Length: 444
Image (cartoon, rainbow, N blue to C red; front, top):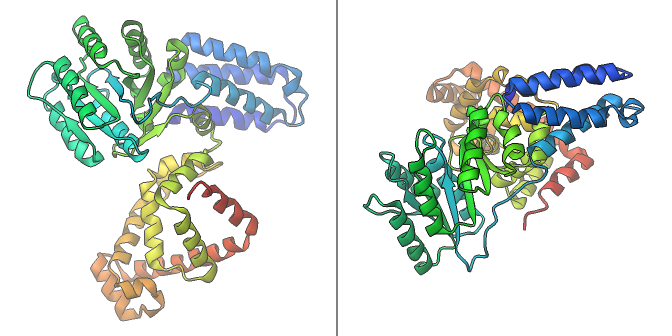
């Protein structure tokens, strides 16, 4: 995520935070480098100027120059300015109560990821106890209706479709169907074009008038940089949008769209697409994204992801196993699978303070992790629950069954023993233990 910009900013901060004293020249030099980094990241020139002017004004005051830790104070000012640039606070969907129908209109150019995003958003709404209905109103792109139906099965959300070429009629009938069947949220997947034209805008204006949406969301490809900003501006001026969802944000190495959209359109980024899976849609938190970009990590999001895969009772049970040294290879495999559900290794490292730039995700042997999974799966349940019964003959059988070697089986067992010992030591640290468990306090 925004790797190029993040690396450059991290390097700038390492240089300035390493100085015992900071002068006005140091600050101006650092801000000049930040300006270049933002422009190279395809951030709008007007937005960059505004950001640099505001940051310069604050950074050159006594608050930084006379501070005990001037480098850290300077970084905080840049962070706060970046948060303001990204939108200040989290902006959620403005939906009506469950007894009143809320319509979400999804718009965008062809190839922006509207259909996939529609399903991801519907899945998210269902998990938050809404009853969503997706409407297949993209009647231009071949197989768009079929694609939404397939995604609907994955998201476990019903799709309304009709055999017609009139999207306005589809939306009108879908709303009647939704009211009759007590759906509380309707997501309309509209058609796009390769570029903005009057045909597209007129069609969307008719659909919007019929749907009367509470949210008119633009779905834009984050990797298109300034083009995404220009598209957002045009859609906002001609149709009036309430927010933006940036897709492919996990692949965006520059970040121009994220930094420019709020300033140019005055509309918030509400969600970001962080992968291809149906659950890979995250709320956009300006402060958390700014922290990730600046290499400060994002512990809150990391804990939230952990909470999605483990409830309080499971966390307490894991703690008991760690304390009593009853943590087994079965538990080891379970934790590995929970971790993979939390997202890519790269995205998890971004959330750990100090990990970014210091831990190379490519240096972590993913092949070795898959081998370990295969080895454990080749064991019997009894062997997973008690690794001490793994005699030489059993290890040979497991190696053959997993397509590995006895050496790799032995290496896994040594690693597992070290992990158990480390967990035992961690549970003796009561301060850390209480902090970890308090993070799960939101569970009932």
